[in-house]
Image (cartoon, rainbow, N blue to C red):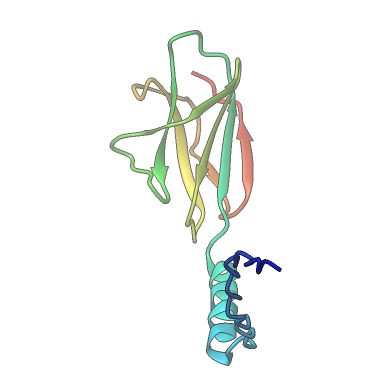
Length: 129
């Protein structure tokens, strides 16, 4: 009788099983940081929105000058054109009333008194030139 030899096939080694790290509860310091950030967001002054309804013609632009965050009586900030007769600007960080005037191309001043808007409020004006 003949002896047969069986071929040995390599056996794959078993991978070591590792446990996933357990999640730790939020540390009190981290929770306090989250609360401080939330409180800081509440103390930040809300944005003030100024819009103007006026068709000034293609190629022209409206500007604001005045007293408030980013405003100056010496040079204006450009408003965004949002419609054929609509312009808008957002001022962040106002803590006192914003006083302003509207100008065409930062050159031609609107007539009448200065406009005033309280911090965090919205106002829509229709200036005359």
